[in-house]
Image 1 (tube, rainbow, N blue to C red):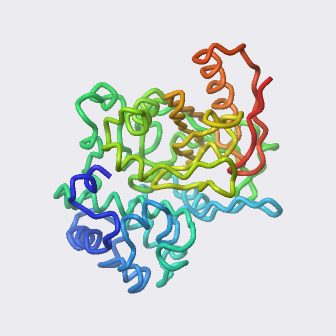
Image 2 (cartoon, rainbow, N blue to C red):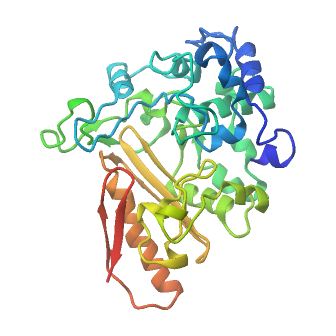
Amino acid sequence: MQLIARGVFKLDEPMAPYADAQLAAMQDVPGLPGLTFRKLSDLWGPQVETVTFHNLLAMQSGIPDFDTANPSRTGKDVDPFRATVYANPTTDYFEPTLMSEPWVVTHNLTSKPGQGFHYSSTNFGILGLILAHHAGVTDYRDFNQSSFLPPSLAATAKTIAWAQRGSPRDHDVVPGFDRTDYNGQDPEARPDGVPVVDVHGVFCGYSASDFVGPPSAVAELGYALWGNASSLVPAQYRDLMVPKTGSSWKDSTFYGLASQNVGLMGITGGTGDYKTAYGHLGATYGYDSIFGYNPTLDVGIAVATNIETSSQTQPSDAFCRVYNRVKNFLTNEPVQACAYKTDGYYGGECSCK
């Protein structure tokens, strides 16, 4: 969005020429596995050449997701890529490898660009390749996204990293535990969960899941983007990212540009302006997290946990309690006791009394 604000890219121009240029530059990079194609159309046909930056950011590209998690309300939760990662715990998965997975190489798009919402972390991986190309970095794994942070966030930048290689242990991340029931895992039989601190695939997906940092850094970065005085993106471009918020589901949208209307997940509780929150949730193997910003209070809150469950309840529950305690304090209300009740992967309700 910074580059779009500067006129380097246009939000509604096709993105494939930039991604293809980076793929061409990477053909001869030593030690880069999985580069079995030369351009995006080799993977998804000629229609991918009409996909715009807006389509990628809005999750309307039709490009398949390399992350295969499929939460089911009625049957078993399946995730073939998770099984692949656990079977190969010391393998680093790079963007070309992920884009070459058989369930991703479909030779056509899942929907016409600009039509329909289809979440795909592959979109963020492609944007990462384009950022590296713009920076003139042939091996995208050497590109540091912190270069986009302003001097005012220099202290925060020192506390974060981009984990293109290695395991959580290699990056001094606290051990994480997968307590999901994907692929027949039994959380009841193994209540501690599957330990993932030595699994490299936790960081699969360049610019999709390789951010490493404390929750305080996420809160600082989220507030720097979404706060009333945004220091990351000019206000008019930041506002383009905001999901539409209304008084009900019918006049609201869940997704904006690279941002979720987390208020629709019920994590804030209440009604009116205080119910609004936008940001993003994050789930990768063994870890769950969420960030939400409310413009009325001008407050951003980040929660990170080192357990992952099928319903992702714990970050939402913590957000519900913390957010409303902050609201009580800032608005001089009586202190309330709050709790979150989940209703599926993305939904639930925070209630206070």
